[in-house]
Amino acid sequence: MALECGTALHEVFAAVRLWQLDRVQGLPKHTKYNGARIFGELRWNMCWNHCVTHTDERDQLLELCFAILKSGNWKDDEKDQVRTMTNMELATIVYCDEQLPKMDNWPIYVEDKENPQSLVGIEQVFDVVLTFDDNYEVRYIGTVDGLVRKASTGEYFVDENKTAARLGEGWRNAFDMKHQQTGYCAISSALFRFKVFRCRVTGLRIKPANRGEDVYPFETIERTEDSFQHWATWVREMAETYERYKDDFEHATRYTHSCNRFFRPCSLLSFCSDTPTGRLLAYHEHMVPMDPSPSERAVQE
Image (cartoon, rainbow, N blue to C red):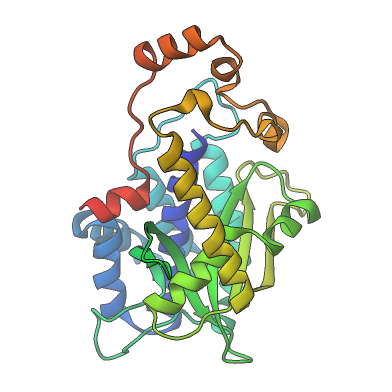
């Protein structure tokens, strides 16, 4: 549910950027092309044509986002009272009200304003091979939410969205060293063909509390060449660990500090604490294939 909710709201974030590309940056052809690229031509045209009937900018933006939400695959689960369509709509209002006044200050990257099919900084899927000095290779896939330019300085930032059940200074501080943002800066430098060392993050609470803590935007997360080296070391270690134990999970190292991360027990705790015989039985009789992530689906198409 958490991944599905995050996917639904990331479609909203993409829609907000597309609206900015059209209404603030004046690039309707780029918007049309990238809307079809991200959502499919039929769905995008339906949602866009619905929103432009409004004359007020805020109403336009909200109607587009609501149409994107309602035309997606989300279905409420009665067991989850946090991740609901109603809460996502309320969070969408909070996010749009946060972003709308700032759009002039953070233009979206556009490679060529004359060519609608040129690279833009919205939902760019990457599928790259990292090659180490000894020719060891790792396939690395994902999606860059956005790439924007800070108008006052001309500096480029990876524009990252995060959804969370709670936000705060502790949540924010975790990004100072997170490998995910380091990797996005490294990959963006290759994808957009110029150095990107900075990241801008906006956190959004899935269930707004209406206490002024529902959205948490911040900058700058800055990375260095040293950061990229440590990230690459981590990527390789994770890949080698996977290769070592993918057919022998019973002997994999246990990192038990992760059993209660994010202040709740891991959903696989009962599996790991079972007997070797019980784990083997559960693996073969109860495990099911996992649906591909949005990034995996994108690179498979």
